[in-house]
Length: 292
Ligand code: Q0Z
Image 1: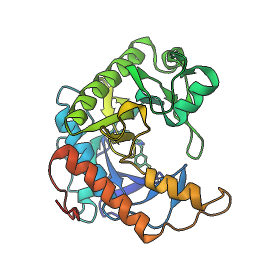
Image 2: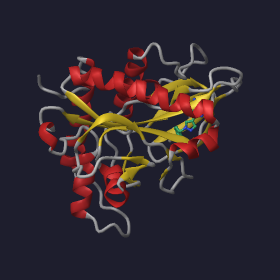
Image 3: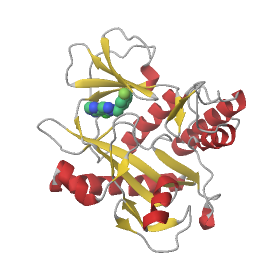
Image 4: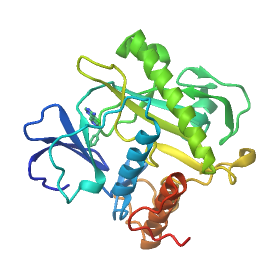
């Protein structure tokens, strides 16, 4: 975490830091770090360039979704050079306590819940689905945002209604599904399958009650798979931190402090994040080491 002149540190998550600009109570600065976590455990060392890549990806997606109200601030105080390329100045919203997950594929924790119950977040699914199978239609599988350190809990749509009211609940669901469909179509043009993703929304004081917030469609909030490699129901070759998860699973029992990631895992992860940005946006990001 960096000391930022003109800003007050508010909170830190496992991989991001939140600041408030002095004298602009309606704004926040979200700073993506290079830190990485897997299975909810913070890991060492950092992935160089990760924060800038994820920030560039969020900005790019907001630009590709011009009809969806988002939280980017139009103006505001200068952002310190030290964090500029991994920071976003945003309007301060009243965040809804719901993780708006959309799945086009059953995998991960969703697949585990499906195996146990035949449903995800109360959405009943056809019998016989295998890990990595595409769904006929994307599904909205909301989760309740747990306090830091706790696991998010999948909740049925009725519970979302209780939390935010019926009208807002419908907007969260409809906007989430619409953004997923649009993004999945754009990703498909780049040969990518958007397996699932998680959105967060907030209410603008006195304004739009469902503004798209936080990071969107990044490899930390989404699973992107190579479309060709995941055709025919084989589990995807992932562009997220799957490399880190796989290495950790093979090299850590899950108790005590996790081992440091070896340099080749750090490099492979950085390369994979860059490759995702390059394939989606068609441009090599700053500091790219990709050989074309
Ligand atoms: C996002 C987070 C952290 C980075 C709060 N537009 C907004 N208005 C109000 N609150 C938020 C946003 Cl995006 C908000 N987070 C998540 C936590 C570092 C992001 F520690 N929390």
